[in-house]
Image 1: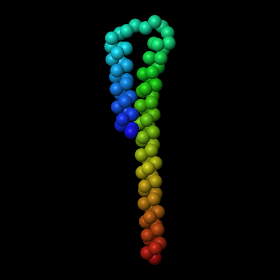
Image 2: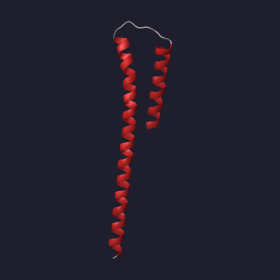
Image 3: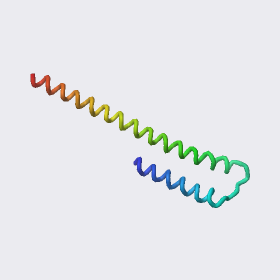
Image 4: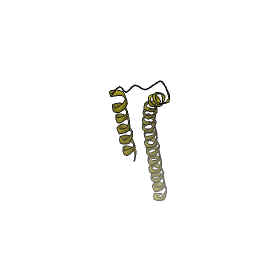
Amino acid sequence: MNGFFRCFLFITEFFIKKIFLDNKIKFNKGIISFLLKYFIRIITLIKLLSVLLMITIKKVIKYHIFSFHGLFQIDRSIKGL
C-alpha cells in the first residue's frame, strides 16, 4: 500500500510539473497559480510525512518484537526452573 501511494504521488507530481511548469503556461495571478504552487509543496510534505511515519512504525514494530522475544525467553527460563 505504501509503495502504491508513493508511486501515485510521484506520477501525479511528475505530470503536474510536466504539464504546467515545462510548457510554461502562464496563469493570471489568482487561485489556480496559488493552488498549483502550494499543491506541489503539499505533495512533497505528504511524501516526507509518509516516510517518517513508515520509519516510526518500523521502529515500534522492532521494539515490540524484541520485547516480546525477551518475554518469551524469560517465560521459558522460569518454566525450566
